[in-house]
Image (cartoon, rainbow, N blue to C red; front, side, top):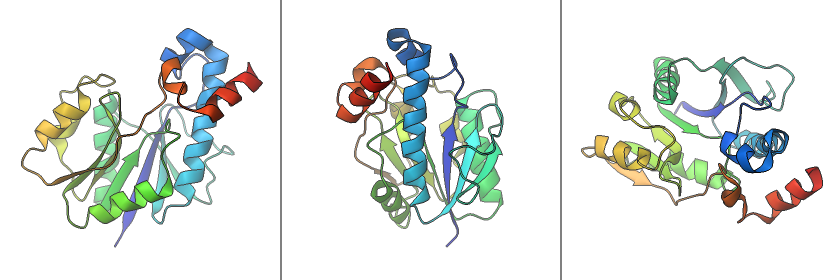
Amino acid sequence: MKTALIVFTRNPELGKCKTRLAKTLGDQSALDIYKYLLQHTAQVAQQVEANRYVFYSVEINTNDIWSEAYFSKKLQNGNDLGERMHNAFDELFKAKYQKVIIIGSDLLDLNRDIIENAFKKLDHHDVVLGPAIDGGYYLLGMKQLHPAIFKNKAWGTETVRQDTLADLANKSVYLLKPLNDIDTFDDMKHYNQLKQFYKTHD
């Protein structure tokens, strides 16, 4: 079966990523932490048995952590997060992938087992969703496109997952275990490795 893993990433630019974290730590520390999270995501994704795609927010970078030995590189396309995700899924389903999963790039708790379990659950479910503790989701997997879930959402707010599940009321949805993504300084408090990283780079 042809499977694809999408990683959505922001280009790591000073002052343009982890802006909520930057309010507390400053732009440079927020950028350093985001790069650390990207490195973790790249290492995890490389272990997954699937065709891997990284979709950049602004421009496609060469010679970065997303090695072309492991990842095909593409550019996000759309006016908001929902439209960009819709277009990424649509492109890969049109390329005849039978299972497609998208993950974010800011979760230290994400690992290979979680992603590979999500692919397996798609054997018996229409959609797999990984709930984020803040009310969004960190993983979304489908066997065919469900356009409604990408529309009319207040992206980045605590209602996203609830509204998405409402759109999927007539579908079989498997929920993975909730995980914490790193958006604010409070989110870092659970992770000794992040706190140690911040201290050594402060």
